[in-house]
Length: 396
Ligand SMILES: Cc1cc2nc3c(=O)[nH]c(=O)nc-3n(C[C@H](O)[C@H](O)[C@H](O)COP(=O)(O)OP(=O)(O)OC[C@H]3O[C@@H](n4cnc5c(N)ncnc54)[C@H](O)[C@@H]3O)c2cc1C
Image 1 (cartoon, rainbow, N blue to C red):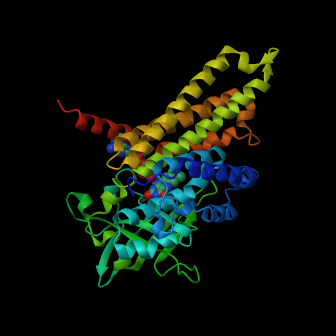
Image 2: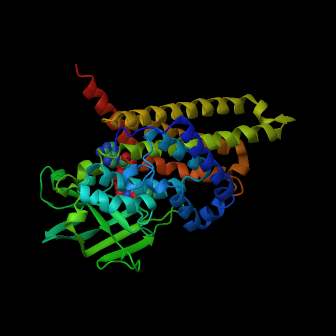
Image 3: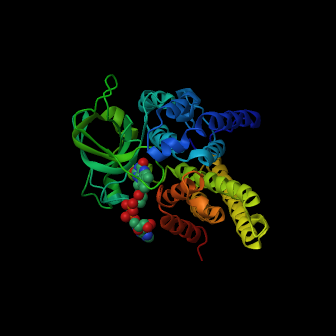
């Protein structure tokens, strides 16, 4: 996965152009309706499959597009300008696929990746539980080996793609008493539906879609496992117990780059809307863009948005070069997502009452931005990670 080859500039441009056309024709007219109804946009998800985005980071030998992190983050930023939730469908899915691609056995890659690449099987990443988010080592879902199967008991909460999805990369404890705790943690790929009937498999207790402030339309929910059994050879990622924590955290820096790219998309759109609005809204006989108070806002919004874009490009390039990028990804994630929230808030002020109206796009950007400060490692943790790497790289 790391160090994936870039496509040519012309191919990247053609891909981004076709995504732009889709956003304009198919997404822009319906996004607000789906978002306000918090309805799963089946037709748009189908389009994402047809455009190959469920396989964006999956290698071509398994049917994916094999895109670089740089191209991928540009796609995510563009789509987030129109409607951020759409990036969650394929990104959470690709985090699951990345775990198989990076750590799976050959048999697991051949079994899962072609189905993930087409979107025939769609899913996400099952880490968080009612009692454990940041402190992942505190999870309580357990899996017990029983011959050629694993039997799983426990529950997960705040899992994206879990209500409509078919499969999860599930973090479990195979040795709950292990010390240090991460040595007892294991990653399983767990199908949750019968492939023919799509009925829940025995032992699956599919919970509700959670009502959310933003990031609506997409299904973030809960799921329970009650003596649920899965095939060990296909499910135990890499054929090894005790490696789940590393797979869940260290291996998924591209997830942070993606969240940072969503922040860029939100900031860009809020800035674009504010620049246009400030030139047509007049007070005291002139456009508000001519008031210095508004210019101070626009100047800061533009500089921060550009800085966020550059940090995301930097992190994506570091990802493509291979190796550990927790510092670069952490910087991009923290700065771009804080910027998204600040720029959306400033845009709301520039829009005045219209910023508060559901008939303009600003209130959605304002509601979508805060998730980015929580997901894929909170922004508190990002700064701690940056500091730890900084200290490790610069010992006295
Ligand atoms: C819309 C949405 C979608 C999500 N999708 C998924 C998904 O698909 N899969 C999944 O597994 N999870 C998902 N999550 C869960 C998300 O990853 C967690 O919410 C996140 O990891 C934070 O965990 P928590 O909510 O339990 O907060 P907590 O861990 O309880 O943290 C609470 C606060 O304490 C701070 N804090 C905690 N520990 C420390 C520390 N050591 N030092 C300093 N500060 C600390 C945090 O930064 C935060 O401010 C989703 C969440 C949301 C809101």
